[in-house]
Image 1 (cartoon, rainbow, N blue to C red):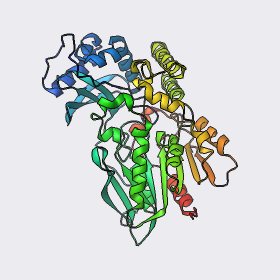
Image 2 (cartoon, one colour):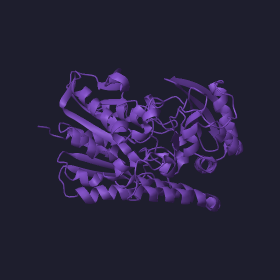
Image 3 (cartoon, one colour):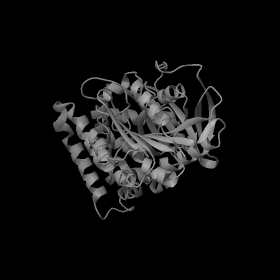
Image 4 (spheres, rainbow, N blue to C red):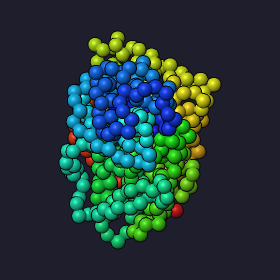
Length: 453
């Protein structure tokens, strides 16, 4: 399920899973080479030929993303990452009956993978715009101390949703306190890679250097994106995030060298928003760290993010007015008391199905957090435009006065907790940086100060 809370820019997501024969004659031949089909589709988008681009959609995609919405989707993307420049590569992943082709595209401000999912008939059944994994070599942050920790591969859970992960374990006898890292929105990898930045890897190396074990893993929507297509309309944050976080906690408790009574959960962005729900389902978790956790309705945050990004280029404000109006209408549908699973996902923000929104409608993170008695640490970058100080203040207002709840904000840090100057923009995510050392130190000191009985 793709949303925009954690991504460096507004990431759009459309998918369908229909295997019904498409009534119209497709532009491109059926059962052709998947990469050729996907690259031609992207080429049509870049030329603004939405009529022909849409002709190879399967039946469900055609209903969810007709020509006008396809145009608005592409233009909204262009508004955030700049004009399309060129295709620079492609690769194909085979998942069950689907071919998922990632066409790497260079835009003015960033490089993205346009993920085109093709069904067994060669029709387009899904469309994603996702960050391209940077080829820039990762450089250790200054606070990482190689030799003070080791890493080993682990598997989170079993069966059809088993996830690959990495356990970073301090060198020594132990037992060590430990933290599970829970991703933000979108199909994140275990490092929460955004451009050349890997904030979860920074946290793992930094905390392990201070004697705290860290478990991170591939998110289900990344590892099994195409496999989730047939059940996309039934997905909620439970399947997207919560279930796997709980399994990861259980794995840590059974791992040698880990203090089972000192297993904490750290959630970033969407993961932070879901901390109260995760905590409710496992009373043995020792405590929680919320990094830039959304506290307000997700649809409001989406609209706020879009408005902010559009405001960065006033010269294009008139051209983007129709895009913003469309999002406002979609947000209104989410808030409509008559919202149901029958509402087409194309009428809702980011084309996320109704069930997902209905599940979140009943969830008020700060209110649920008031029932939590275990220690909590809230961290927020004051330059963060994606999850803002307004969200941070909601948490503060709900939990102020609690002796075991700590709030810290950082003047120069953005959504990734990387330092910068001036107004934060999507462009800065393309510059390599590291989670600020003060954040790592504050988390380690807080964990070290918790007395678990």
